[in-house]
Amino acid sequence: MASNHPTQSQPAKDSAQEEERLEDALYHLNQLHLQLRRLRSALPRMLEPLNTKQPSPEAMYSAFMQSVDSTTKELGSFRDALASREIRTILAKANESQKRDPKGIKQWRAMDDPFWADPDRKRVKTE
Image 1 (cartoon, rainbow, N blue to C red):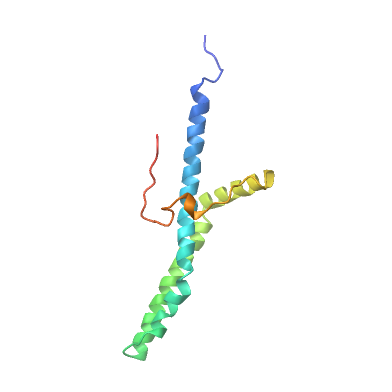
Image 2: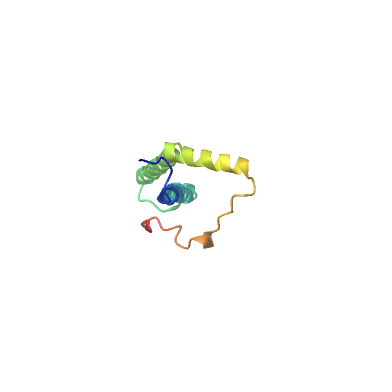
């Protein structure tokens, strides 16, 4: 006779799935944070062609417009990432959690993950 009672492996399976979802969420947030950090230097990078000696005014204008175009693309990419469904879902869950327990979210520090700023680091899944 079949039983509808959950087995012992069910909670472990749910826990592993939840951990994987949380790791994916952290990965998405880390990528968004790296994009935001790069945008901090957007204005200096955009204005750099104006501070360097150029062979002609046309060359200076061309270099400036290229840097503006590049910065505009970076901003658009950040806006798209921020408006993505994954990030909206993650931030909504964080807001719900914070409303339930305002002091329950531990503040993150850079020393918690020494490789957080490395965009080339691959996620290593532990099993």
